[in-house]
Length: 405
Image 1 (spheres, rainbow, N blue to C red):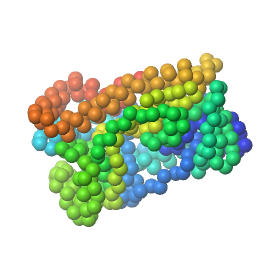
Image 2: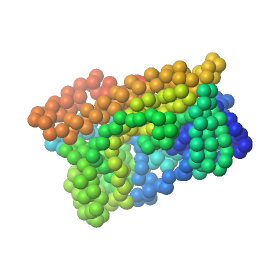
Image 3: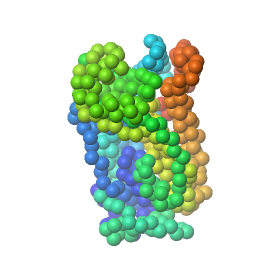
Image 4: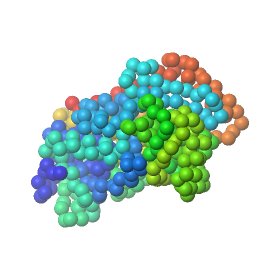
């Protein structure tokens, strides 16, 4: 897809990385009149499990409103499965906590969507504008940092100049590396196992998360009454689970998850990925901004990673649009600092929460079991605390623009 001349040597913004977060930024900027170029090395191969992309994301209600404002949700809603309730419990506790969308007067806490479906919907939204060029496959050969612009040389010989380069190229960001930005990293020594499974009973829009000493097991509702599992386990246990034959894995899954949906009768192909927490030491520098996993990566136990990235994209897009309106240089550090200062409280609070949950549910210190049980009972019995937790976790209480003005 191309809205710019193939020989264009200027772009107002160049986005490196054509995943969900990079495309969200392109969607947000597509009607601003700015010329946007997205550079993607190659579309990732989709790994299917029971005919579904085994990589999924739980898009929280606040971010659904963002996708509605961007004109993306209309292309996505048929592929999205609502999560109306969520039940969370400890492996040693029978009760746990139940969250219901009616408690915050919403129709859903969020929606589960296959990553490839989200990207396809964003591509369709980008086609509505002639101001976005999607270059794929395309690879950068060299970056030249200058005072007023970045020169981007592609391996096909094309050269582009831009006042702002955005790194949306994932946890191993090449842009971040070229900008000389280091990271703080936390290795959880765990892997996340993902697969699509078929339970006997209808999930009725319920999501489940069971915390185990080796990591959480989530069962998330998909369309057609399928479910997506995300089973986080210590490396040795994850490797053991991945080596199992299909029947043995099904037996282990049923034993661990329990009978909430009857038996799980079928599991598709499994995939596993290492779990790490990461934060860039600088989210912005002159002429460079990082968004999504390039800036921060969190434990997937709450499924909030892509939601943080989409909120990054929206805040950065609004700062770029505002800078253009007031004739500012949107690649200047003074403008990019405004983006960083707005996003860090959200990012750091979520990262701290995920680290806290990880320690509380996997720690083996004396008294932690009792503390977990007490915390769950307090949160479950307090309507006010529960509502605050739910509105924060669904992104409804955050001051993030829902569309770019």
